[in-house]
Structures are given as C-alpha cells and as structure tokens.
Image 1 (tube, rainbow, N blue to C red):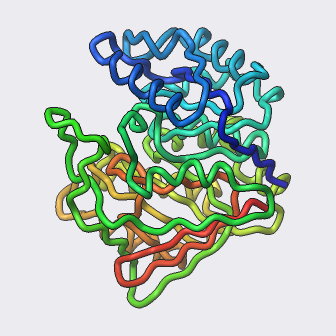
Image 2: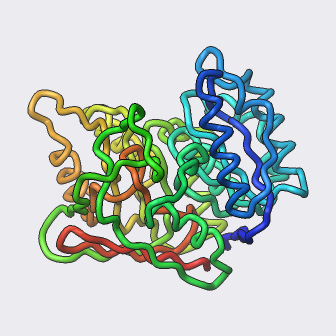
Length: 337
C-alpha cells in the first residue's frame, strides 16, 4: 500500500537544502521564491542550509540530515521543497531517520530525486518529482509547472490528469528574466520507439538517473522489497531524466539497473528531454532507447516533460500511472491508490 500526503492552501512550507544551498550572490532568488509562495497563500519556514554553500554542498552531511529530520518532525510543516538540486545529497542518507518519516509531501528534482526515491522505496510514502522552489519565483508559472499544486492536492483514490506541454525551454536566459521564469520557445514533441500510439500503465518510480543510480546495491535502493511490501504484483513504469551523462554512460547505467533487477515486471520506460545525451562515436541516444526497448520488450517514450529541460510534469513516486503518447503529444493520468 502507498501512503499519500495531502496538500491544502495555507499550509506551511519547509525549505531545507539536503544537497546544494544558494550562494550569497543568488540569495535574491531564494528570497523572491519565498515571497511568491507567501503570495500564493502558504507560510514559509526557512532552514539554515538554503543560505550556505561551500565545497559543492550546503553544509556537512550530518548537518543537512539533522535539519531535514527536524523539519520533517516539525508539526507546523506539511510540505518540503528544497531550493534546487546539487551534487552530494547521497552523503546524507545514512543520517535520515527513515523510520520516523511522516506523511508530508517532498517536492523537487535533480539531486533531490535521489532522496525522493529512497523515501518511497524505504517507507511506501509517495514523493513528488517536479519543480523546485527557485523555479517558482516568477509572477506566474506555465500550465505544466503550475500543475504541481493540483497534483499534490489530489486525495487518496482520486485521479489527476496532466498533458504534455505546448512548448519547452531550449536554453536558460538569466540575462533576460521573465515573469514566467522559463523562456518557452520550442515546440514540445513526445517521441516513441516504434510507430502509432503507445499506452503504458503501472506504478511510477524514477528521477534523475545520474543520481538515483547510486542507490543500486544499497539499503536505500531495494526495489524488490518495495514491490513485495507495497505494490505486490503491480508493474512499474520508470521515468528517468539525464542531466549530464553521455550515451555510453547512460547505457552502462541502464544495464546495471537491469542486472540489479530494477526492470523486473517493468511495463514501460519514460525519458525526459535532456541537455546531455552526448553521442560517443556514432552511438546516439536513439540507439540507446531502441536497444533498451528491444532488449526488455517494452515501450519507450522519450523527450517527455521531465527534468532539466523545463517545463516538467509532476510525477508521483508510487502512484498508479497511465501514460499515452501519440502524434508528438502525451498524457499522464495518475491515480492515488
């Protein structure tokens, strides 16, 4: 059984940085994001770690872990949103008190997705892979990004439908800030291996493949135990996004996941648009996707709205998903059962 937190307007948001904090010269981004959340009707409690950054992390691992634990235990806080991702969240897992994790939403992506997946696998509590706090600092959000509130407000046994975006952002333009934060200029096109329409369904699990791959073989990445305990018999649909890996590094990672049993009873795999996927030799990303689809005999949908090329759909780890893709467009129906 999956346990789902619930979001309501007026709740208090806790902001901690389990990976990277915000350097001094960018503190205005954190302040404006906090102000926007308050304008939307939320209260905000800021930790110490979001304001500091040194040696590729916001603070030493135990300090980050302790602040996360304290905020999770704080009854005033119902939603946790880190400012953004980073590099070394993996260090804090040994300091997280998984036995006392309460049912409250944690929202984010990039390095944060490692923590999200670990919590869902260890506890059966749903977590939310979606926007981070800093990207909510705009006067308004595009429809795809803004859906995070509706998704997190979905009640148990209910469903929420999200559609592929109309356009995505090709490149960041920090020199030209906009009221929407993102500069959505390119036509979105969801792609599939094969032809026609693809429909897959199963329990959603995933995140940034650069980081979640490091859960393999650890007590925090026991996918089989999660299946047996929380979703017995249900297939899994994996969603991945690649931040920095070349095609060969991505291929090695996918093969390792297969060897580790992560793709047992897998009904499909989704890949987000990527700023990476660097071709090695003449081994292109389409080759990786095609080999995976043939090898596992499952559908592969790629260039979806997920990850470091925004906007992104809010995917719930543990929710039952039905994903359709055809003619460059797609839908994600998630049911909280």
